[in-house]
Image (cartoon, rainbow, N blue to C red; front, side, top):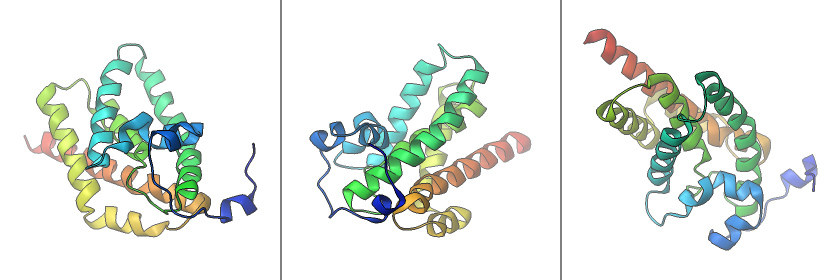
Length: 178
């Protein structure tokens, strides 16, 4: 089934998110982080933890170049999945959509690994602070692309990519100072 521009402007009424919804379309499975977004509390944190765990497994099977390609391909795939899932949920930027956390955390880990557990934990914590508190540029990015359709789908991803950039900048400054 292909989506036309007209279909993307039509928004479904708000829906309860559960396993049945997640399994009803491949885009839902991706956007909901293969179930992480179904967490009843702090789905963004749960999604980031799942992304971290997935990355620790994936890095054993992929070269650094393949890891970068995976992240690069995850962006348009996530844009599509988040756009469609938000429309089907009837919520412009639902907390249950956690694919944005996956992409951001994978990008951070790809650029900071190899790092020990403490370094990875610091990267996780910094990202969660930037993503949840939305200081400065993250708040700007969060407000830039709102709504439904392709613009809103990009907005779901964009603020987390900016939060990842802020995390990487903070880590770089930390390494430079110490």
